[in-house]
Image (cartoon, rainbow, N blue to C red):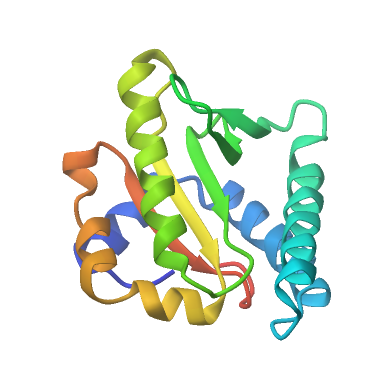
Length: 167
């Protein structure tokens, strides 16, 4: 997990570490052997979609797992990659390190909109899983400042490197 000052400590105390580890390990296991960074754009898109589907399936298809894939965002035509309905956590997977900030901001707004439109179904944690280069790009500037707005947004924010073993 990247260090975002007070956020890192707050997040570590709030999210269920066993469930976080389960999701992070699954992302690492699926990503490592299946991703090639130098693939052509259309091939990379197909690989990215396949990796995400396998990751989602590994977690959400187990009966009583508490995970749901392609969970609808209330009020808009968008979906979350994976949610943990038991721990009230949204997980988004960015397979490539290209432009992670675009996905990061979009996904944060999806959580904000969902929580505003469905307070009875609100999420308390947001976890963005991306590559080492993606994590590096999100450690500074606006992304870092946005991640520090957790109390204002109403949910904690994590950014995890899928290339490393789970925390």
